[in-house]
Length: 335
Image (tube, helix red, strand yellow):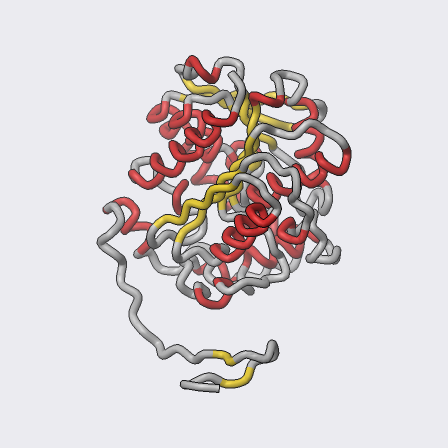
């Protein structure tokens, strides 16, 4: 043992790091600096105990998102409307101008929110960003969540929605994308599609996925209290995911897909940030895909906490992230 370390349970040494100031870097845009420099979200400390308390938190978070949708759609020239995929609630999200190369292509979007937040219209901002910046037609799945439904309800809905969507266009011209819980559900969908013999999408984009609910991974510690969105590995998002799991084994690959068999996966692009609590989740999925011989790209953005690449459509980093995904899809989707 050397330095200030002390023996750890895994046989190595735990390093003790002195408290230090964390400046907002000038290496990101002014828009991103506002996001990076914001204080940690105080909600991470909340511990709802009843279904009513969970519903109140979900509704409180949804209200400003839904209120901002008309302006977001106007800025990005996108419209949306309710639809259904089989009997699963969904939204059709379409840009005013579909790129000519994308006329026979279709994306399936799976929103994030720690398996609890962003019901109905509140789950649409990421789909709108992809439709607007990428020029794709998007179907966004409004899957069931607690306290109305628990594991595996969200995944069941996503699989049913994918199966229905895959009859609307050739799966070779389709991709699936999502962030956070949506990034994990994207991976879980492919695991289920493989096991059930369903068609696979031609490509996937998994943004900072909640790919390991057991909280295994370096940045659960190194970025704790540095990520100003999730903040802590024991924070509200982890509580929400455990609420969804309903006592099920958190290491099940259909909850923690990093433990699944990823051989035969379609090409994947993964996105995270240097301050993201789930950076290790993202890196570990990328390495597992590469070890299985799957084509996979990893984009890590300067200074960003969890999913901040989709928080402000005026930030150049937001447009860059979605154009990276759009270009990745364009190279792999049939026309």
